[in-house]
Length: 109
Image (cartoon, rainbow, N blue to C red; front, side, top):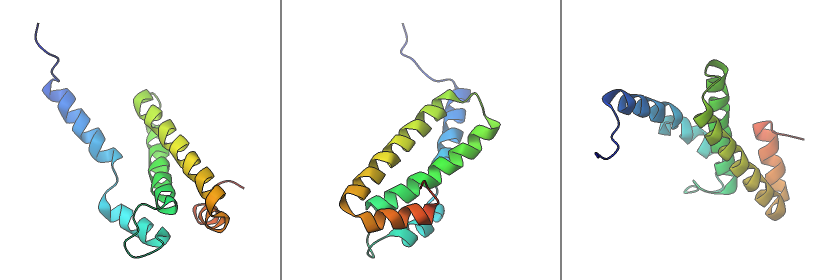
């Protein structure tokens, strides 16, 4: 029995989906600059929340045309839960920054 191998078509589709779903650095840099706390900051909770929000919004647009894309929807739900956990962390540790991020991203409350 041969090990599992993707056909040429499946590999191309997988590459296209990966390119579409990952954010380009040109799209990330304005978001990072807007929310970073110092010059080298790329991973603080406000930056992570902003990047996740950007990806969530782009996936929401994707689902308007691809209603049956269940696998990407699962990834969307994972991103939403990660953003929720980061928001809870930020609320516990830095209330002012939490409010600032919520207002800047037009999220709840």
